[in-house]
Image (cartoon, rainbow, N blue to C red; front, top):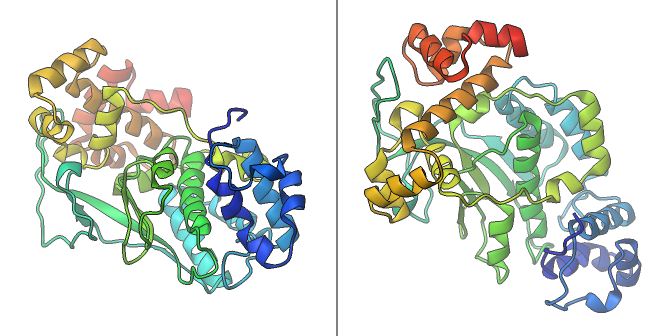
Length: 371
């Protein structure tokens, strides 16, 4: 957190609302250990710690978690109450629904909620900048052993609306960005892994600092959308909440540091392919030719590059199923049959054979040993 990598733009964006209410810029910057003459100096980058302290200073003086950037104040402590409620959910999907109900009850100016019906989402190389249309009765086939490639040109994703209805007081769109980032990273923290969000939507034009968004959000970025929010594959809603109450207290004590912390970037070919594959059902994942087309590589080149990294497309696909199965085994409310179905197997016996091949243990023995 000591490396300065955050754009100077965020100094002004953070204090705009507080200055409008009459609070002094000098005092806010001093609280964050930011020299006053750094204001509006693009070459002066700040650290995550400085930005975190600046946000905290604005929270304290405005008594507003929305930093004076919305038409209505959101009292300090509202997010903590939501987090405590959402942490009691069993899964990420439960957390998203709980948080939506909570904010709908306590704050009028935010439209938040999960669209339960899947939306067809095209691969990255063919995606449109508009909101995708609804599916029209798509059917799926499923083999006993999903290690056989069966791919589709579209992937069913869910959209989570997280949209501020009035952004006139936030000319830099900081609050909308922060809310999207907060929900995404808090959700990933609760389930103990980064969630590969397929796309994040913003209901405003791309700003001058658009390049900075790549450091904050994963997946595709879409501006000029009707509403803000993000897409994710439905299977991630089943990931169990693994954080304890004591861990949540530490998270809230350090907030917003955990939210602002940029995960280490891994630009390996394996990771890029994993991010693509995680947008599809397990039995509908693209084959080598389709992955090659999306990455603009010849299939032979893709195979060779993966081999150089000590991997293959088959290994990546199997590891995705294995990792997901292990996550689901942490969820005591799911039986082996349900887990086998959710990992793309039509028969529990085929899943058990595959799991033992992956780990050396049956799913039941794994659960008894590690859960």
